[in-house]
Every structure is written in C-alpha cells, then in structure tokens.
Image 1 (tube, rainbow, N blue to C red):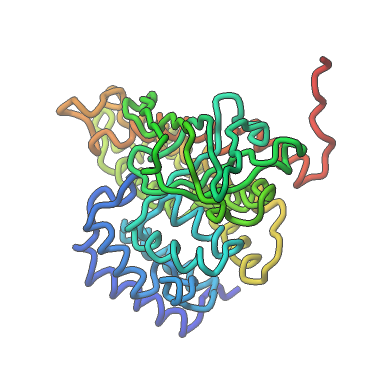
Image 2: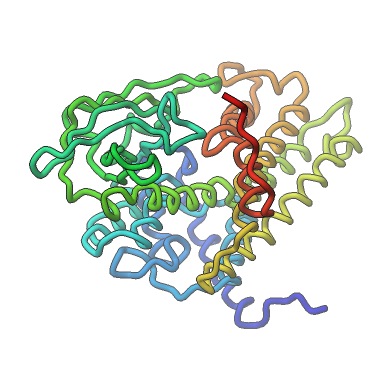
Length: 397
C-alpha cells in the first residue's frame, strides 16, 4: 500500500519546511497563552496569513489567505509545524469560534467589520454563555434584554468568562423573548466590553491564576442591530459557535505539539540514572497516548473531509471534545509522574521544569474536562445524538 502524498504535495511540504527554517526565529514566546496577543504575536499571525499558514481558506475580502480547501495541504501544515515545535498562529475565542460563526451566519456588514481585525489579533473577544445557574443546561439562562427604543437594555450575570478582563468585545447569549420556550427566546448579541454598565471580576482557579471571570451587566445598552441572526434564533447560532469551540479544544495539531514536548521531557529526565523513556511502565503509557493521538489525527482528517464536502460528520464531531480534553490531561499527568518529586513543584521553585507549564496544564486541563460541556454531558450527547440511544431518564419530581 502506497501512502505517499505524491510529488505535488511533497513539493508543498518542502515549501512549508523552508518557511519554518527561514522564520522560526520570529516565533514569539507565549504565543499559545490566552488573552491579548503581544505585538510580536500579531506580527507572526500576519506573516502566517500572508503565506497561507493561518486563515488559509478564509476569503481574502475578509482578511484571510483565500485558498481552496485541500485536506492534505492542511494536514501537511499541521505536521510540519508540530515537528518544528512551532505553534500555528493565534488561537483564541474570536479566531476559532466567532469568526467561523460569522462566516456561516453573519451579515455581510458583520463579516467585513469584524473578521479581519479579529484574525489579525487586533480585536480580542470573550464568550458570554454560562451563568451561575445555567451551565450544563445553558438554555435556561436568565440574563435578559428588554427593547427600549433602538437598544436592548441588558441585565444579568455571566460566569467563567475567559479573558473578559482583557477583551474588547463579547459575543453573548441574552433572553430577549421571555414569553417563548427557553430554546426559542434567546438572541446572540455582539457588543463592546467598554459599554457602560459592565463589571468584570476575576476568578482565581486551582492553577493559581485568574483565567476566568464573573461578568455583571447593569442596564447595558446595546443597539438592536448588533445581533447575529434574528431575535429568538440565538440558540441556533450558539450551537454553531459551540461546534467550533469543540473543534478548538480538540485540535490534534496543538495536542501533537504537546505530545512531542512530553517525548522531549522523557528523553532528558532520569530516574535512578535511567532515562524516563526507557522505563517500561512510562513507555507503555506514552505509547497508549500516541495511539490515542493517532486516532484523533485520523478523525480530524474525517472532519476535514466532511467540511470540504459540506457534509455533517455526525458522530465523528461529537467525540472530539471528550476525547481531546481527556487525552490532553493524560499527557500532562504523565509528565508530572515522569518528573517525580519535581512534578509537585510550582513556578516559584528554582528546580521547576519548563517554567511550571506542566503543572499549570495539569490543573487547567482538568478544568476543561468540565468546561465547554462536562464529560458526562458529552457522553450523553454522543450516546443520544450519535448512537441513537434513548435519552437519560429524568429523576422524578
């Protein structure tokens, strides 16, 4: 069986390698961190877009590269960036979640106004979905918007709002049709975080940092024109965004880069004079993770094929978030065990490895198994929507 990509694709692969060799010194530090990208990160992002390694298939009129979808080229880019330990551009909620939502469901005015500055890293977004009483049952949200003249007047609260303390804009679910059933009464609004009446309070998590926030809205006025879709269609638009969120959390290219970092760690860390990678128990765990990662990569190709054909991938998409979050956490868990007693140190110790990134990742990724749809909810979705099993019975009142 010949699994070679063919001469044209190997030529393309060499072009990617040449680009990385010539520009690897321009990769900014901390590119993968959430929040506002640095000027260096924005410059790197714009260089990637110029050469077609970021925003590759987004039309040029909206700030992308404008290439036709090509599954193998996308795979080659991911492989070579991972092999070079180079992150493939800025990854944040605006680029990975809002941009594809606007391209799919936004007006022409919204696409032209927001897609390009978001892609370039000039505009940072946060997501206003979860509320203190509406997490897994998101459709029960209570933040409300009442029409007053040409504005919605918004009152309520969101929680777990990533990067809200640094964001310029928010895409937010608001109940605007209180008389309708809960799934039909929500609207999807976009507005500035500088709007009067918005208060952001950081929430420190078990990582020791405040990646999330509480966000309060008190008589916040938002023009009724700043809506994606129509009034009451917010649940439909929100699910389009959630689809892209799960894809962002389950990016196999990003996970492969982390896996390679684990391999590097295991080749340098020693236990009783033996490399960690030569320890049979650790090596067995590493190989199991490698197999999981390979399965994710091939499932990613299935998703790319479906996207190129404008088909619904069904079950293939539903498993992404659950599998990726659990595997990512398992990668960090193995790294912690490999480091032995050094694995319990944190970033204030002179002996900490990789600036404490493995310890931070272990805690943060554990949270992601809950955030974005808990593992239990994901399993229900897979069983009910993907496998056609009966709905989980509700407890008697």
